[in-house]
Length: 280
Image (cartoon, rainbow, N blue to C red; front, side, top):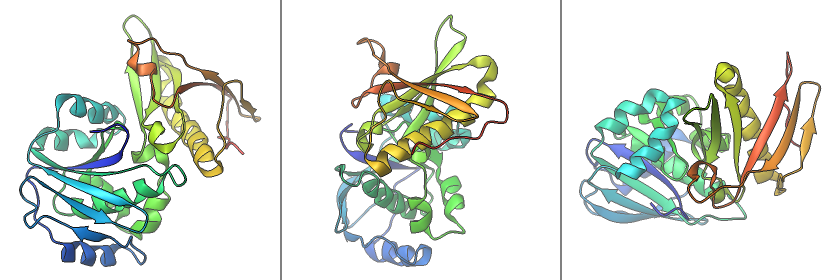
């Protein structure tokens, strides 16, 4: 998938059949204020082809593919499975997928992702196995995602979704002969912000992973909402934790340190009884 387009993929055991009318009815059932999609769908969505779902803000391309994802793409969406393992069975089972993609909007970086997520979840109602983000290295079980939205207005719930949940994936990298892990985000260039990474000692991984997710989400949300960038040299301190920001350079063969928008290394020292800070 092009790395310069915001995209999501819905995985199936076979391509589903649906119409514009069915999607419009589904939207009314799950939200009081759904996106106003205008569709140009192929006559038969069960075979390979292309379509469009447009709103006033975005023109979403739908690509219907009657094949499995490529090996590199499978590796990227499976990297997240260590943290959220419920997608693994669906990834293994799928034989077809629908790709939704749109140009990023630097002025409103989350809007396109939110519209894609709403559309992806509506399509996933038709026995979607997995909702994935190849560029964000994330994947979630289709039924699991729909269950999270079940008792909520979908538009409201998706707008409250933290960036690190689906739009940018946290991945843990292991290194030979090294007891530390490297945890980093992927796909932040599509949100107009740098990717983030941190070193996690394996002996405290259970404590540090949830904390790191909160630190990353807070920093990413701050940059997206304020338009300000967190830069090398910035620090933040509370009674509970000290955070320092460093530039993370990368050699050509060090893909785990590379990002189109640059990589920042986050170092933090939590204290007993810590309260997670927010950048402000």
